[in-house]
View 1 (cartoon, one colour):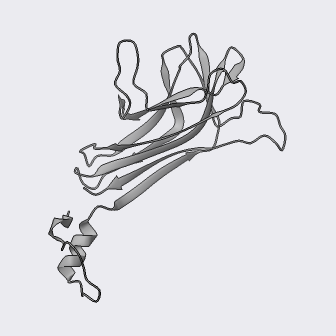
View 2: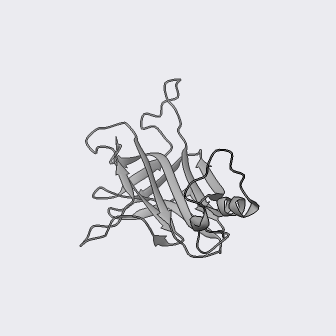
View 3: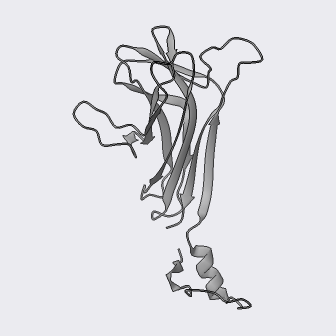
Length: 188
């Protein structure tokens, strides 16, 4: 890929760009490809305290065109946890490249790495909305899958749920949200 370092410090009004200038601009940092997955159905899974589970259908696979490319990952999800029949909007999410957790905080002692959490555990029957992003350097041109996982933040076994309101009554005041993961290849 071309590098933008040979570009002039500034262009002037009326200046004609050469083909070499245009090629350098073309090679400057840009989005090379975008892959996005929107999950519209409900996901629920029982998870023991401190465990995690992949959110089925909330993943995206991209094949970088260059090993020097960065992959920018954004996630937006609506979720909740069922704690003994009481829905809590507290939820924690993890991002994985393949089977490897990436972009989360530093694990310490018994504390695990997560990318984001949201909500408040004492407020019942509402949902949490979690959004996060991460700029990854996979250093590969092989197909790479980014997967979102839900993490169980409460003692005992809970049901992690995505894309469903806590009060899921069949009425016009109840909605069904979607969740999205988008990955973008950014030229180096």
